[in-house]
Image (cartoon, rainbow, N blue to C red; front, side, top):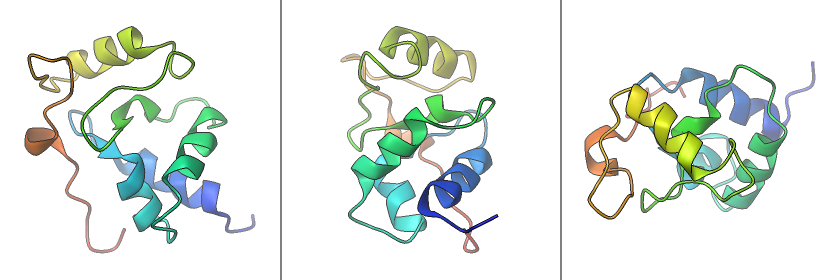
Length: 105
């Protein structure tokens, strides 16, 4: 299979552990295109079933738009079930649960 940007993004998303989150920009950087966070979002919209795409969010901890993952309410439920902490304003506390990517990512 051809090595494409979306494929690299999917491989990274598959590695985000339960209870951790990553940002669109973080994944773009790790996939080799640091300014492609919107393309990461587009790739996740077409992601294969079974990937933990709900673990990806905006850099400020905001949840997805209404169209993704069944909406932010569903995304929050999935993250809460994994023990991801939220701030009083509804954003994820990324300082506590941001995925520390391994060197070989």
